[in-house]
Image (cartoon, rainbow, N blue to C red; front, side, top):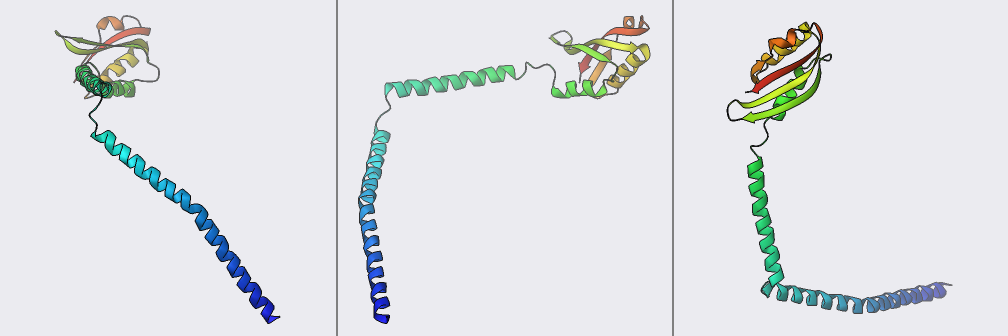
Length: 167
């Protein structure tokens, strides 16, 4: 019985060794071919790097450079176009009371008066409109708040226009 198990173990190890040898032999061509393909791809890459760029590549490169230059020019020109910053809009919305309705915000940048924000809307009463104006005057985001006296003619449901000069 001992001899049988001993022979069985030896045959099993020989069979496993043979399977490993066949597996390694079957993987060898794949390993060889992948190495050749890698060397071939590396050689082609070096050859393409050493070639002078074609006319189409140069035109594409020039086009990209020209487009980049134009975009930077447009971005620099547009940088000063925005009249009101997010800080000014935030200051208006934070000071606005729930019963005051703003219907329109207009931005103006004239050489004579400078930057100006015009608010249009509805207020329920003179008192609420006056409180809104005072809240905006007390805000450091605005240098001047102008509310024409004509807005106070009506006693309730007042349609108002308010001019703000940001600081």
